[in-house]
Image (cartoon, rainbow, N blue to C red; front, top):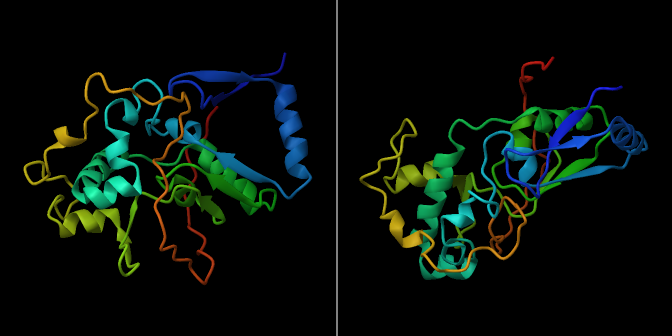
Length: 226
């Protein structure tokens, strides 16, 4: 009997896994070897890094009111509430690093077997793992974009400028607005879908595209797994 590999199942919670047969792995390998292959990823690939999903039990939309913080209309009405949610996402992402899945996809791209990645995820782990051709369908919530002038900065820098985090990146709890305004109220209907997509609704234009391809990001390999 061959060894069994396991992968995260996006339709389940972050702690569950799905068995993948040797035959399925071989089929995937044959498809990749044909070339012109792009990977489409969602919450499952980052759940193994400790990033919570959005709609599964224990997900962010079970705690926070997505109608207030996940749509441009909500942002235009109450930007502070939306940024308060981003601060909680910043908190969640502290200490989160790419996992073996992210590094494997980056290596396939290095080998010329993968043309790129299309992801629903917003935490930038594919890029941090070294993938260069990454399309982030819902944007990147580690970055901030001014809707007036299209200036960009890291979300960390934006939080520093409003006095919500210290120079060392620690959150100044007493300076942050009350989080209760963005919590999902008891009795409000939760997410209607069981999808574990790892992103709120996408932001509007302006869409500023870089004229030069992103530089390759040096990366260190994760420890080997026996």
